[in-house]
Image 1: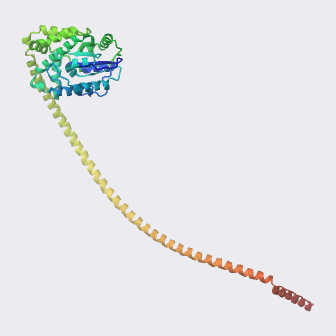
Image 2 (image 1 turned 135 degrees about the horizontal axis):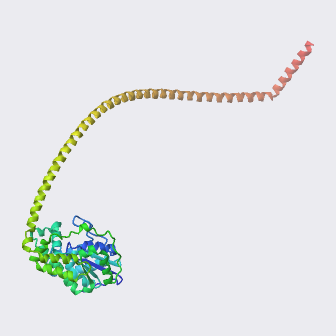
Image 3 (image 1 turned 180 degrees about the horizontal axis):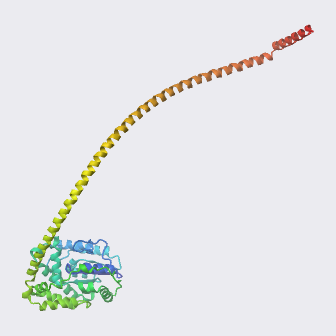
Length: 422
């Protein structure tokens, strides 16, 4: 398959390993250290409280290719090689182009383990972070998770160990083929030596990742079965190749924290199998007994809570009856006040109607007065006109010859009268 050219100034980190092996924790740490693991990531759920840190683009891509070959898209397969048809090769190149935006980028998906050679050929400069965990703890985690994709283990419980062998053998084979492009590390090493793992990556790949946030890892989320050595013995007895692969992984992994693995393997080899073979039987009986005690305690507490609830219910009913009585009294009082208010309203309405009638009458009288006033004003105007005409007539008479003669005659008569009296 022809390789796909990516900008030389960008480094791709591909994080993978068997399911439940700590790949989510590893991806979270690398993201905190500066690796862009994608914008669209699978969210948290009951089995991964902190989130999966899986880029949905590559997650869906792997599932689609698996389905195209008639393989369970959860990755539960022992098939040696998964064929990738040309249409999916073109799709993979598109995903690379879309997601390779940052100087340090990559993705995490356990299914990538089934496609290691495919991605190594397509991205010849990519770096691989290969994570592993003991087979007994992976099996225990798969059983406890019990998700929709895990129901197959209820009918085929040994398949979990076989898948661990299949996935981790692929990791070993790939690491042997490309040791310079790989970091092989355990989840225990990552959990206990965060900064040293980043230093190892920086040194080997000549990159400059930052130290991850100190609170990125919550230790309580990593369940370690140090006390249940009998289960490890059971795996080693029936699947010795699993123990051999686990030892080979430990031998080839970066030497940061091997104490946990070596101690557990030593206990497995020294454990008397015939004794520990019955341990699950004993544990089951203990669990049943403890379950009965818990159920009895739960029933006792439930009964006490029921009595308390009944007492509270009785008190609530009394309070409810009291409230109802108060409500009824309030309703009677409210109805009386409402009747009084309605009577007052009726009286007010009657007074309003009378006021409106008086107002209408006043308006009518006002209109009549306005008409009379207009008539008076008209008569006054006519009188003024007549007076002006009379004044004009008198003025004209004063200036006439007749008036002048009349005035002279009256003056002469007045004088003659005065002379006679003398």
